[in-house]
Each structure stands twice: as structure tokens, then as C-alpha cells.
Length: 598
Image (cartoon, rainbow, N blue to C red):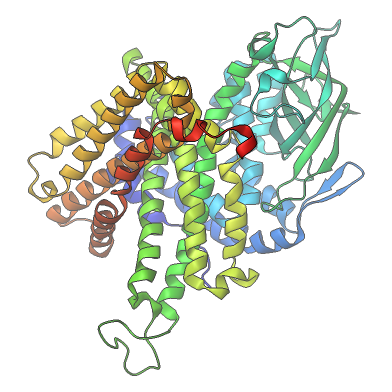
């Protein structure tokens, strides 16, 4: 059985060679100290934590799960010690605001660490990323007093954070929430309500838990425009950031019994006149929370891609070692009873599909993270605006498409192992269970597709897609005279033209039939995801050719990347034709059937 190995060579190839991250960071004042050497050192240490600290407690954590007893949640053996080591290593404040004790590292770097942590132990990684998202929201929107009171302890890892959105009757439609916030005389608020599906809402890893809670004042406007955001600590804190010893009126009513991520506490949280403090402006809470949501949605794509990587490592090693049958062209291992199953074309199909989607998913996640960093740190307003537009377009696709392909990769890895993939010993059945949630939480993938189709495409008349097309065309212009790319570039041109034509078609159809938006949304998300994966593979292959020509890099790695890219272009990219045809069929086949006929 394979032990998880951090894919540092692939990560560093993408960061350093494809995206040239150190050059980009050198051009922004707040990231100019993030050099290639610093990134390598940080990634190597994160790899050691993933392999040596988190992976060894992954299966045992799944088997034990979290335990709830009268409001107290206990995490599995080893999790407290692992979290303490994580905190002592400074990881909780890696991307934090330097004015309050954070290290100010960019998301492009931390995203790769998240992927490794998710590969090694998805349940543990969730505790970490919730804190990162909560601190980002506090840093961006809270008062200076709240920042100074809470951020240093959260960056140290002694306190952790959550986000509390969903209620029993209000999931996607947050405008329906009933949690109430009533002003107190001292400027704080009393919050009353119930939140469900709260990741890390209660646990024993930190001494305090800081909840970010969406609620409405009694006189708030109806719907989403009446939502405000509040900071509600588990234990009350004085002005010097010391625990007062007084427990706030926040309790965990129960934890969910789930398909996967069993060592991550998913809680029902009850607020009974709990004391909280306003974060940002009244009635602007949903917009403020979306600061966190964009980063969290990126993380969900990373989770599935990380678990796909873990599954690929196990499946590829198994395929090299498991002997069954003979190669179609004759024995490759005549001294043994059979050949390794890697000789069989269908096994190669599964492994190459996994590999192609993992590498493209990792690249797309980096591309999206880079836009988040540019939008946050770049000095030029025009550059920031372009990055913000790309973030708006890319995040729903990265979250949905990467999590779909990541889950499929976990299932393919299971299939490579056959019966061994179905039993717990090898870990692949856990990966399938753990990856499944990435398609559901932080906005189910159907909602991501609808957001992409409706707000990000129809309402802005394709403006955001035009920004991406400009990026693609700049790359095409750079590669047009590169001989090695001559047979490769037409794949990108065809994909670009297909997404442009399909987008124009949908915009026209939607003028006459509102159902066209929802009918086209999911296949359109998949088509844009496939187009983006094509763009990522074009960049990867172009860089590999460039390295080969210069006699640089690892020859085996470069050859493998070029051949995997070729597999993607020839065997996976044609699915775009079917998606375009599905979209062209329109809404009528979906909407014609009557309710009683279902």
C-alpha cells in the first residue's frame, strides 16, 4: 500500500516554470520577499508535515470519528497533538495580516499547502482552512479593535474560527435566515438562532472558537439585503485578548453522522442570546462573508484535487506491482506468471485520465489563486480590476469542475484496484467518501454552475469570458512561432472558438426563454472547465518543450507531462463537442415533462 508523498516536483514545476510565481511576486510590494527559495523551503516543510504528521492519523481518524457528549466534541486520537504542532510551526498565520502577527504569504503559495494537507488528511485540513478564512474576513472587514483583540490569537493557532451561515430551513437561499441580532446597550448584540452544517463549530483542538455568524436585526430589510455579519466567541474575551472565563451562550446541539470527513466535526450550533460584535456595516454581511467564501470555494476544489492525487499515487503504484494477465502484444514479463496490469490499455486510460485531470486541476487552482493575490496586492488599478474579473469567472468553475473531476479520479483509482479498492485497508474507499462532500458544500456545484451562467455570463453579456479569451490569445501569440507547439495550438483554438460560440448562443436563447439559463448552466460550466483545462495543459506542455530545448529540468518528468498533455488533447478534449451539442438542445427537453409525469 502506497504512503502519501507530497508531489513537490509537479507543484514546483507549475509555480516556478509555468506561472513564474517568484517574478510575479517580485513586482508587488507586499509579496516581493516571497522568493523561489522561500517558497521551496515552505513547501518542503509542508510536505514533511503532510507525510509524517497528518497522513499517519488519517485512516484512524476516519475509523474513530468525532464524538459528541453533552455539547462537548472530542476529536480522534492524535488530532490535538497534530494541531498543536501545526500551530507551533506558525502555519495558522501563514497568510495572515502582518500588522497583527500574520506572515503575509500569498494564496498562490498557501493553496499548494492546502492541497497537500487535503491529500494527507482532509478532516484535519478543514479545521485549518476554516480558521484561515475567518481571519481573512476579520482582517478585511472588522474594526481595528476587533482585529487587535482576536487576530493575534487566531494566527498563533490557540484560537480557531468558523463561519455560520446555513440554517435548517435556509441553505442556498440565505435571505431566509431567521437568526436574530438585537442591539445591546454596550454596542454589542444578542444573537439567537440555530445554524447547521457548521464545520469545526465545536472541538477540543483550541481553547477558544470564534464564530462568524450571519443574522438579521429586527428591523432589517427582507431578503439578502437585511443580513449582517457578527463575531461571536465561544468564550468571552477582554480588551487585552485574555479569556474572561465566562462561557458565551453558544452550544453545540449535536454533530452529524456523515458519509466521509468523519474526523471533522460538523455541528448544529445553538445561539441563545449569545453576545456578538458587528463585523463591517449593518445589512452588508453577505457581501462581507463572500470575502471568505471565494477563498473557501477555492479550497473545496483543492480538497478534491488533493484526494485525487492521493488516489493516483496508490493506483499507479498498484498498477506497476499487481500482475494479472498478459499484455495484448505478448508477455512483457515472461519470467513471471503474469504482467503488471499497467500493460493493459484500459488501466492506462484510467490512470492517464486521473493524471491529466489532477495536473490541470492543480494548474487551474494556481491560476485562480494568482488572480486572488493580484486583486489583493497589485498596485495598478487596471491590473487589479482584470484580476477581480477573472476571479469572478474562475472561482465557480474551479470549485465545481475540480471537485467533479477530483471525485471521479478517486472512483477511477478505486476501480484500478478492483476489489482491493473497495475495502478499507487501501484507503481508496475513504478517499471516495471524503471527496464527495467537495461537490456539495460551500455552494453545491449546480449552484456554482447557475452563478457562472446567470450572474457571470448572461447578466454581464459575456464580458468576463472576454477577459479570459484575451489571456488565451496572448498565450497563443507568444507560442505561434514555436515549432514544437504547431500541432498542439489548434486544440486550444478550437476550444476557444467553441466556448465563444456557445456563450453567444446561450445569451441569444435566454432573451426568449428564462429557462435556458438553468438548462444550459451545468454543461456550460463543464465546457468552460474543459476549456480551462485545455488552456492549462497548453501552458504546461509549452513550458515542458521550452525546458527540453534548453536542456533544463527533469527529462523524465518533462516527457511524462508532454505525453499526458497529448492524451488530454486527443482523448479527453473531444468531450467538448458533446457538451456543446447538449447545450444547443435547449431547455425544451428538460421543461416539457409535467410535474405529474416525474
